[in-house]
Length: 276
Length: 361
Ligand SMILES: Nc1ncnc2c1ncn2[C@@H]1O[C@H](COP(=O)(O)OP(=O)(O)OP(=O)(O)O)[C@@H](O)[C@H]1O
Ligand SMILES: [Mg+2]
Image 1 (cartoon, rainbow over the protein chains, first blue to last red):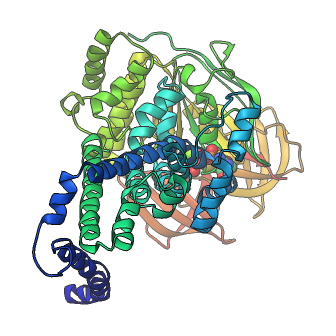
Image 2: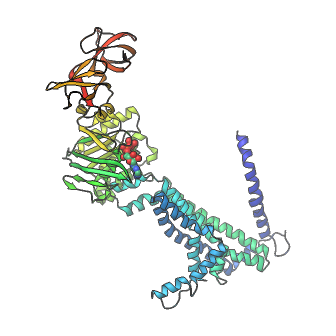
Image 3: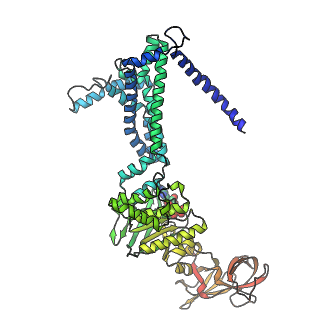
């Protein structure tokens, strides 16, 4: 039986090996080779990265961008999930449909729609100005604020769905019990619902974070040419500068940095949530 | 200790879910310190009524009053109602201690008072040594005691128990019943307990309210519910019973004379105001029947199908000549041994008081 179940796992393992492990090995090998001649072992690409401020500031910007977008996503996504978990099935599917909608539109169409909304003479600026909130148009497009807004919207389902799943599994009697013991809605949310939904929050944050830092199209089109994040940087090094080994080194560093961030999040969450 | 409990009044309360009437014009008054058991089959609206009293759902009509003052405008967190759920609903991410302290913190007790109060409550339910465990590290009965301590810690006006013992095995259930009864008495707290276990209701409650399809069928003391059920439903739901169909022949101040469908005549103590000629069904509890070897007046012959010795009593399953099945439970006195299966006996009610008649529509 053990043997049979191992046999069942073979196709998946093979796919994993060919489609994931092998390219990773190639990438690693490439990053450790010299500028031109493939195969000569050198650490020069890594040395170059860490000795050049420009390079690692891009990495830090990218990781921070992920944190900001994830935070915005959480702040808006948690209430959506909370409301959805409490709604009747019909309202719940409507809410979910709205949240999932961005995934179902092409990334290019969606991004250009945002350009129309965020631009200097875009919809958002016209509303803000007609309300008299500001004289000068806000600089949203080609700014980090714009990128954060768009990423948060696009990745929303990755935040909402895991949280909703966990929330709807929480025993509804718990919030009733909390209420009967004299707790108001906020205390119940803060002391009962929120702690019990941390697994969903962690999963949502990890997914959103990973998706935000690697969102090449959104970052490049909304951020413009002057805001460079790691995915674009890697692309420019590989395709623009034709420096494949350096691009490979950037990729490896980026990957490790994202994994480290995810692992950190996981440990914090596990510590906070050992018993629930 | 026995503080005077708070009176609870349920005043013509109805509740509709969409077009389904779950609670139908229920009125019930419970004096301070009383323990009322809500008894009824599954889906009859017991939990819904409890949730209305607790303030989790707003009734469609009617009022809830504590000590004469309406509480309908108060949300659940300001009603002072303690509730223990069937699944206990302990907070899984908190220790036993924090679970018990939760209500005290929510109700803004002085920090210095919370610790001693929690210890006191845990001692009362014999859970002090488990204070630092998490709920999932406890057995069902232990969780139940923590739920009780958590609920009683804040001195609720009213205690609501929704099938609190359903998940416990028989011995533990008995222990917990005794314990809850003791705590309830000690605190003098008005209690409403939902159950669909009639023995539990009979054993624990001062009064029993029997519900059926959203309506209250009868509210009375356990003995009265058992001996003088108001409706056929109550008679059948509480305890087991034999139903004999017949027609009311005559009725006077001494009771009623009924002719059963097989021709035997039978007296019932109370005619319930029915008129002669009414179609009735006579209900006799198994222990309200006597068996004799000879034909006596009012007895019908039957053949014993099964004999079940139940310790001090014996239950007989008897088939009468017209094919009706009767259950009889008789005390096993030293002299009379067991009757044999397949022997013929004559079955008659012990007394007119053992017969309850109900009209058939
Ligand atoms: N939220 C709801 N929406 C619609 N109908 C409901 C809802 N809650 C309960 N009901 C219905 O109301 C009726 C009474 O339910 P309730 O939970 O009060 O029954 P109960 O007497 O507690 O039964 P049980 O002994 O099985 O717990 C049931 O028929 C149920 O289907
Ligand atoms: Mg119920």
